[in-house]
Image (cartoon, rainbow, N blue to C red; front, side):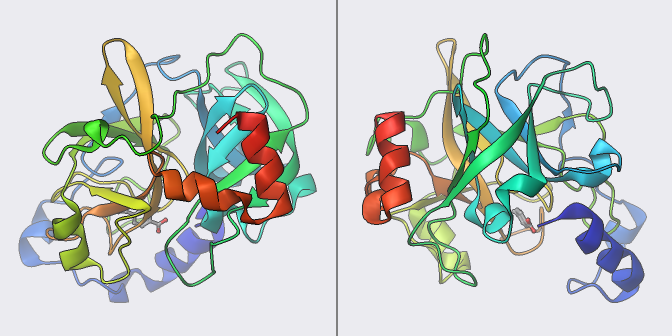
Length: 278
Ligand code: 4AZ
């Protein structure tokens, strides 16, 4: 999750990280979101960096991605939000280069709603919402799919994932500029074969060797552009390492009716759902 603390840990523990580097990877290091490229300034006005408030650089304060889904609501991952306190957070909407304070809109967070079925240590229902102190006007929120349509989730179709997360599986490298990579969607059967905790009712998975999201991308969007409209189909959730062969990235599936319906199992979730008309 959080970049600075987690990355400090990686920095000191680098030689003995969980996944030993294979010889060919040592001579051919993978760089990028994993395997991606920098995105043009202004390309994603609804993209969000969630940050801890404070004096540090935006790069150090960034800890997760998110997306604007209503003028005053940000969608992110539960594992990003579950230990956070609203008063200590801010979000930056529509900024591409984290250090460029002239880009985008900064808002405070007034309320955090973690999905009531999200259980720490479990991986499913990895969805949370932030209510903002003031709407972001003049920015079109990203669209969410019609519940329980799976037309956007066809295995083999290409989706995109963007974020400021780690670009290198072996070194902690956080980019200042937003990056993105195209990832193939996989079938539920393929996902379940890798992750026994995978829940096809609320998850979707995507990626292949050297094309993946990574630490720091969590909470950010997996999306497809269809005839000029952008649909967010997933929220970066988890994976075994980043960009490893046979270990795709897992995403909370924003097409899942069950994911949204069960949000109403808490009073806060129910209110937020009404607010979003979902
Ligand atoms: C993480 O640690 C993380 N490859 C996020 C996404 C993925 C793996 C790890 C998916 O936040």
